[in-house]
Image (cartoon, rainbow, N blue to C red):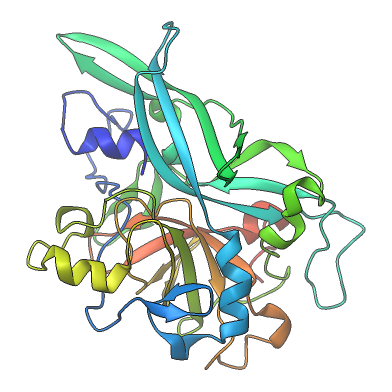
Length: 328
């Protein structure tokens, strides 16, 4: 789902160095198969892997909010883009200081694109004994079959990022730091019907808890659901398609939070190499009392990738939007 992930499939000396640290960073293939029980089935306009996990009304509201992001990279100093790959992207209503509702939710003045930082980060690669930098060139999403929108992101070099510590014992780090990046452009609510295609963000003092039910909507635009890209070499391609859904469809993967970290959450959602950047949101069925009706469908995190344990994870957005008080 990103240049860096693509390159990680073919390891080269010097790639993704961690400022000389000796800690073992996680290979950021963007997801693992967690549950073989779930199956992608038709539900409303698209597909979901557990229809009992959310209402059809919420599913139909979420489907239009899943976008694929076409990403291109070029060698630094070169003119043409040389490498192309795909990721996921969402839009969030951005906070306005004077527009926090009584429920604690924000009323945004517009939308901003968001994805996983490692989708667009520039990387150092050693080729023939020389260090080359491949930098982000362009990112585009397709609103319709006839309208493509370029998304501008700030340029960042992977080697300049401070790794994020997921756990101390055993030591586990994520070399991309807080792996979330916002596009530079703020869209008004009339852009291509954007108001209905963006996520509301979780309320300011919402408490993330283990057991809260969550979902993640993913747009399939490439044939990446393979045993290698789901960390499940024992599962056939046919079964994986039944679990994840068919190409050129949108599927909502469902599950629950299994751990709450400092600025990340871990969960049992199924994911694969191609899901990074997808928005993780709250479901509207079987929730604990901490999730109120106005929280249903609200964005809480951006999917990053897998951990060394049998789990996937994403970075929470409340600390980014609200500051240090974002999660309580």
